[in-house]
Image 1 (tube, rainbow, N blue to C red):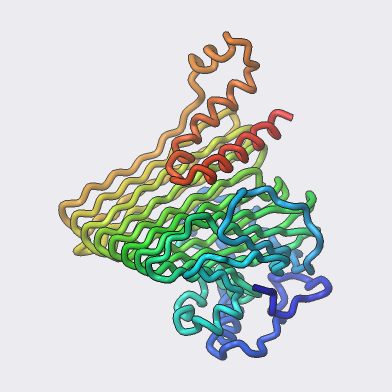
Image 2 (cartoon, rainbow, N blue to C red; image 1 turned 30 degrees about the horizontal axis):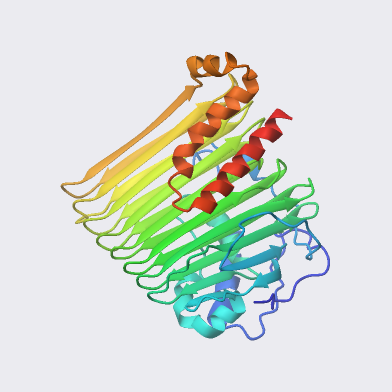
Length: 432
């Protein structure tokens, strides 16, 4: 796998002001046109405003991204991740700098250009503007217009990949921006786990505007775990589309650890009977950081299930917004769907806004939703204080326990250990 699209060698004044300049040579005409149409769409779409329900409670001043530009790839630190992987890809500023090719029969890990050559027609429905319908249409159009490369995983029917595929996306440089896209196409009865890291080198402001698309065919199972690990000057916009077929299972988990602003939109469409979707998240925010998450659990057919569990741990003046909807379409009887958002407030100045919702258009369904916000139990804190543990360390220990409910549902020992380690490191940073 290699970066085959021409990369710029100097600053582009702004990805928000200048049309893309990528080399289109050798690419399918339909894909070229889709990018040109996306740029036109981006320039015509308005900036989100306060009266837009999909941006309710959001601090729109955090969307001032003018001046962000593309930079060429530069050396970055080695990122610690999983000890054993089926394949590993590292990108810097959207350029692939290393790729350990898959040795697993039936698993292809491809660049965008290679994937278009081998699976062009199969990819075509996925290489459009990744709009979730949850408010981020303008950023989805920008993402597609600026798309330079992608990591595409194609898993043959019946293939069980024992070790995860690991992807590391670096951004490096002052006001650097990247547009990572990951596409997972799992064939019937295939099994795959993917771990994706988003990292910043240095401490300058960076912006990631990425998209993830996962399709699991009948009987397939896909687990996708994303660690957003940019520093406090980093901002991220994540657009995620999940689709599970008959008896298929898709599990998506995101860990937002440290970055100053994150907006995520996750749509899960359960499209086959017996299909299931699990949506998980843990966010740790401090100071003036903001986490804004919008979700949709869309049940299209009868006898399907989904379960969402999002947890936020808030320090200082951090803010969080969660708006989630369970939608049961007409005829999607016997749906079993749950949605829960829990907020742990560790200061008097933090703010949590939660808006769970239901839209049911079928009979004999079992659906529930809810949101809670609360402080630490003083009894639990006192128990640890009485054993000589300082208060701040006690609060962090209890917060880690609060996150365990999500970590335990990842279903992979090494990924769970990595998630726990990264959260422990984040709490140690807050104590420093």
